[in-house]
Length: 265
Ligand SMILES: Nc1ncnc2c1ncn2[C@@H]1O[C@H](COP(=O)(O)OP(=O)(O)O)[C@@H](O)[C@H]1O
Ligand SMILES: [Mg+2]
Image (cartoon, rainbow, N blue to C red; front, side, top):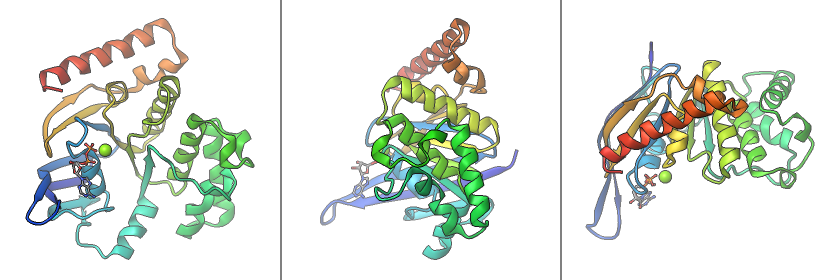
């Protein structure tokens, strides 16, 4: 499988007042293969979000290289970086930041229009398709106050996928959701991954991480361990909860929890 993203020896520090440099990423190496569903776990403050921002070009490391599709992006000018993010990457966050004065449909198509790589008609058609896939078709004309948290996160996913990015990044994408909405979003992400999109999530939630295929564990700015859980498909379908699949998901979660305990989480 091709490597989509190859980050090497990333270092990043924040200056907290004079002479007080706090290293947040320390010589971090990480690779993401095409088609993977990967998560980064670790205690709060361990550097998970910082790692995500530095590999996706939202922030720049102090040193190290980030190869995205074999292209070094750490040194790209801002314009090219934003173009790359717009066309080739999708983002979902804990808070989705939708525009209040636009309908849900318009929020989804906006970055499709901005990209100018497809006709508006194509973008509209793709938005309809995505809304159908994520089960929010009936919300198209609503404004964003007329949707639940789980529905809004689906809107966020549609928006992130509008330009057909090869990779989707998520920072605590279920962080603001209750557990059943969170399960549904994870099932949806697993489905999106099975359809071919590479996904990398940052989370402190064991349940969420246990739905991914490979879990990296961060501590104090370093990736200190890695666990392969294998294909996420079976566990993710447990929203259609037969007792057997629910049990499999539970076992997977306990397996990950035991491993994390060994890592000192
Ligand atoms: N913009 C910033 N300025 C200063 N310090 C920051 C900034 N962003 C993050 N940090 C610090 O870097 C450390 C790691 O933060 P973060 O990557 O958000 O961790 P995590 O996502 O694992 O909770 C924390 O100690 C945090 O306070
Ligand atoms: Mg974070």
